[in-house]
Length: 369
Image (cartoon, rainbow, N blue to C red; front, side):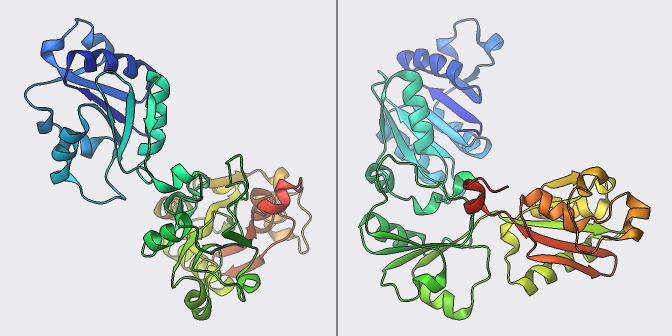
């Protein structure tokens, strides 16, 4: 687990185990009662608390992404019950028994990372991880975490529960992947036979299934939504690269308007944008930086020499005069996406020029760059 983790213990043995675990968790903070003080706490950054650990749990919930508690499972359940809010925001909670025989994933197993944290803690303490999430136990697709490691974004959690039930209950499931990383199946066994993979909604149109997982950068039609999302989950892979050129001082609002209009015209979701690419002269352009900050998009920049290595259909002498490159948006989009061609070669609107390219993971996996 990459987020900050709080480790708390309330017994003598738990404190010793917590001290051992804290050494193995570079992102962990250890808490225990002052009566177990050993003299090196200040040096090691160990925190003390007084009274019941119940008093500090609300603060730990707020400050940390994960909690590892050397406390009995029943006591933990009673203590955290009043402060639970939502599966998408509650931290991971893991319980370890006083002899470190079992490490138990208690709360936020998937989205919060408790299952991952459980395995990490169990490995550090040479204990047995106890994970009860059905998709983990059955080694199948975790609907609420599918594509998470690649940065895929779930469009809506509304149908996640019934779709998860279909996956673990081995009902027919259509997995439609039109774009995005392909290496999502990591188990050393074949994909379960009740899950069938299709390359497009068109290919899956005549299939019979109880639930669907749809991975695409496209905006779906009303008919597609009815067919595949009435009991389906939509994932947005980060595959769209926006090549952007603009005049100095172009406002955030103008750049954003051109970007959203262009994506809409192409039928693409802004949630599938991976990054913006441009010339290094624009690395400090306020409007571009503000747009990246608003949507969490990284900004990738290239030198004129790098951009000029891309063969353009319509090189611009005017652009070359001012930038040293024969084009900005078109070559920047292709370079960043590692693509052969554009989805939108070039569109000029006001002070903004935009090009759109897509990262083709299927071809890149076969060696195409």
